[in-house]
Length: 319
Image (cartoon, rainbow, N blue to C red):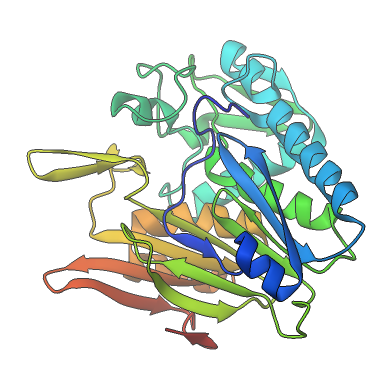
């Protein structure tokens, strides 16, 4: 969406196993990579003559989502809404916006697609959205058919907390029929099997290190992680991360170092990881259960990081 800055939130601590060239050669898989949304994408698949076609499909999907939903682009549908407070949008943008608003309601504002100005006040997010605009007012957005509007002057929309997951789903759909694991800026989806016949494997890194906290077999669900180590600074001993609590109107400060969510879709995992980061493990439990997702929280404590698994995340996982 804009390679100069990270458009979609940087996630902390997701590693893709068997995705380095040496491992690829040994495992008879190939690795394709490219830029995406200020970060990167990476595809691992068995040796096949379909790699070039797969890359074209990936690039087409990412370019389309960028053109529709980037708040960095004045010509995107989101950019046009942010400029005028009203815009006609495609079915795709409308569907992602509707999903964002539903999650905002279900999380009681822990996830809020209007929070970007608050991020700007703390030095994060899209510079195209001024810090002085209203923030944390998702209830003032209106979506009627193809018309996105608001009666709140200056209200802006930023789908960064959910659109990358949507792009992950769209890439997985575009690659239907292939065996692969795909990473988009740290979010993961896998289909089929590894060339050896086993399941593809996913890994979760320990925040602030290159060590793996968990390794587990992919089972068709998507994985997304939010954390406070990718973008942060400290003032007076307090960590200010890019993840905002819209209700407190401040960066999250609840002891959550990272939270990894497994959900049926990338869009669901993406949005829920942000909401769960804000809520913390106990408050997020009901939301995760209701939406059929599970999560692994890594909490900061006096003795280092502690795991808190919610809704059966640990089942089938290995440390």
